[in-house]
Amino acid sequence: MSSRLSQRIAFALLFLATLVVVLPVVVILAIIVAKGASAISWEFLFTMPRDGMSAGGILPAILGTLYLVLGAVLFAVPLGVAAAVYLVEYSGDNRFSRLVKLAIVNLAGVPSVVYGLFGLGIFVIFFRFGASILSGALTLGIMILPVIITSAREALESVPRHFRTVSLSLGASRWQTIRHSVLPHALPGILTGMILGLGRAAGETAPILFTVAAFYLPRLPQSVFDQTMALPYHLYVISTQVPGVPENVRYGTALVLLALVLLLNLAAIILRSRFRARKKW
Amino acid sequence: MVTRAAKFSIQGLHVHYGSLCALRDLNLEIAAHELFTVIGPANSGKSTFLNSLNRLIDLEAHSRVSGGIRLDGIDIRAGLEVEALRRKVGIVFALPLPLPISIYENVVYGLRMQGVRDAKALDAAVERSLRESYLWEEVKDRLRTPAMNLSGGQQQRLCMARILAGQPDVLLFDEPTSGLDPISTARIEETLLVLKEKYTIVLVTNNVAQAARVGDRTAFFLMGEMVEVSATSTMFTTPADSRTSDYITGKFG
Ligand SMILES: Nc1ncnc2c1ncn2[C@@H]1O[C@H](COP(=O)(O)OP(=O)(O)OP(=O)(O)O)[C@@H](O)[C@H]1O
Ligand SMILES: [Mg+2]
Image 1 (cartoon, chains in turn purple, brown):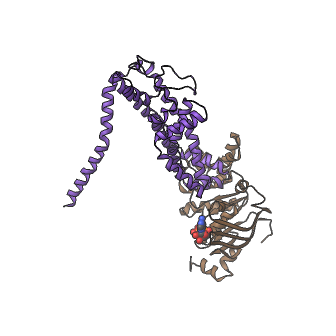
Image 2 (cartoon, helix red, strand yellow):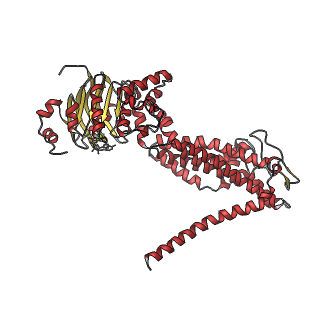
Image 3 (cartoon, protein in one colour):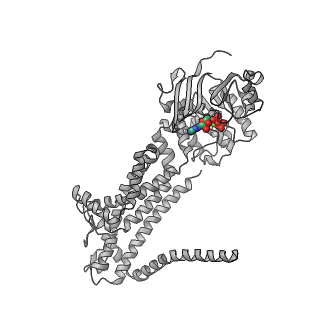
């Protein structure tokens, strides 16, 4: 076979592979938009559900998901970044830190329903938070901790070593060095981890199933100890548990969930690129 | 030589990296306001020596230091906080290493870490130290621009200003001109000669001629040992040790 021919075949195969990857995304989006767009209206986005969820809006589910995601991120980002700083900047490479790193890798592989059971046992029952936004957000937070810690670690490790040496040589303490010469430059990477975590927290059903999600609760939560509806669970409910929900309402809900995740990601990406623009070395 | 108070006095200094002995039984006094130069081939322990003086050596994972170093009679381990030591003993590295922030922020970094907040004091320190390193005229109109945009020679003078801002006693230079062109090198050397009026300077250089041009005294290091130390003019005219003369006449290294 001539080298030109084999090159052509290789390119064709690579292109096909790319197509196979992209196609499902495009098809899913197209179907959801085509079937769901007609449901989107002010009423759908900003009012309570009516008539056994077959009419009205999905406001409580939208807000519920927003609260849960923000709560999870508020809990997981500071904790995860602190852990990563400890692992990278303080602990060095000893048996304990290797054990912690191993635990984090394994934590990332735990199925989400197991996190749900864990949240039920710890937050709902043991800490007596009940089925509440607090329990759900903490459960989701723990679920996204591994990805936050891992990307924060990578971000910290990619900050050039000489930033630390220079800062210390100018009389800064170790903490000042981390605070002023390491963390600011790791921020874009930390935000990347946050974006990944956001998307996962918004879309998962299993972790919120036992810890917060309400089947049908047509009012807005008043505090973090209230239950709430949430988009992924609501979608599951109207698709499989309640008969007679119009198709465009179901796909409209999916569309809103998708848009919400994309919007949150977009916000984080804009934030990240603003930090990147300042980074020069 | 006129007897002056010793700035640094070093007794029985040994430095190991793991099992490798990088500096062996060093005994040395460095006088206040002298420009002390250190020469020697690669891996002879010159950087190890400099980094011992401000305890940057502690950052190396496997380093072990024994023996004593006194600064103005005070033991640098027992008698001083490491942050205070490093403010008194500033260092300029071989590569210009500005932090990826503005020129202004580079200069005031150490002061900010010390807790200086007063904008007037910071402004004054920036002008004073940039003038001292002969960079002021070139950058006074763009203090808020990224330090990375400066040329290599300018960056190196910024690194000098950065340690001068903290009003140190001693300036350490580790081959500060090894990455620079001859004109930038000459400017740095001129600056060194002015700065020694105010500071004690230890200059490590891989350029023997540079040591001869600017040094008051010179030490020759070889494989972790200080072979010889004497007035620079003596060392370059009548070295006591044959290894020294071999090195400065370019027979090895
Ligand atoms: N962090 C370290 N870990 C292990 N060994 C080291 C470390 N730093 C230096 N060494 C070793 O210690 C010895 C002295 O190194 P040092 O950097 O002090 O030499 P130098 O005279 O500054 O050399 P150069 O002219 O190349 O800068 C060398 O053999 C070097 O390989
Ligand atoms: Mg060196």
